[in-house]
Image (cartoon, rainbow, N blue to C red):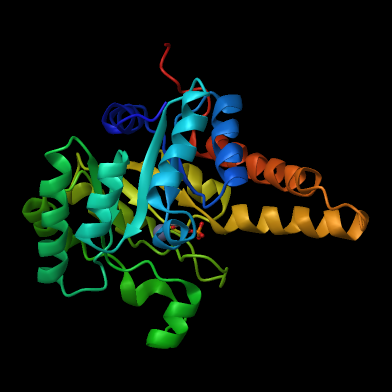
Length: 290
Ligand code: G3H
Ligand code: ZN
């Protein structure tokens, strides 16, 4: 069933593992994510972006995740990924989301604090968890086009700002920019562990979040998962698995138009990536004895 994240993040924080947050915008990805959590006996975060909610409206998405979560015997957190406004956060909370990210990281710090605090006040009145972002986690294209930068180093989280930000916003978790990049792999995405340790030193009891996990080496992800990072976001590697399975299908099966035969193997390919990430993040087998 869909659950509030508070106890699960406390367990992850205390037991030094991370809960995977996997993006979905359709039935098959959602089945794959929750199915992998069941096979791995792992808590899981199903997350949808603004674009996913344009593709499938928030009511349908909540009903879809809710139905699959109710049919499963694992706790599922339903999370808004990279929310951009209070209105969007409110709509998701009213629909039944149990966790919200408000990403105002591209705004000047005072504006980021103001918007984040408004979402926190609304969400906390309704028992909903809030994640915010400090420093920017751009996509490879964003770095090049917007800033001509070849590495994420220009957008890393400033640890000194983090303390003020958390104090003034009362967020439950902070997404930090420590060298990961959304999406495509540039070869420059690797975790700046000294920065992660500095943020942890300044905010020792705050759950942290790492985005852009696709393309990061497993040993780095294992090390991240045993820090105060309690949530690790993965999207691109799921899409790559989906695309590869579909390409294989069409390369080998020309005449089939049965959607189930087409999408079933792609769904299974996504589930396999999710299961592997749960093992690396250490959440496999961590379900509290029910
Ligand atoms: O918010 C979503 C994730 O940060 C996606 O990152 O596509 O690099 O796995 P990724
Ligand atoms: Zn992200």
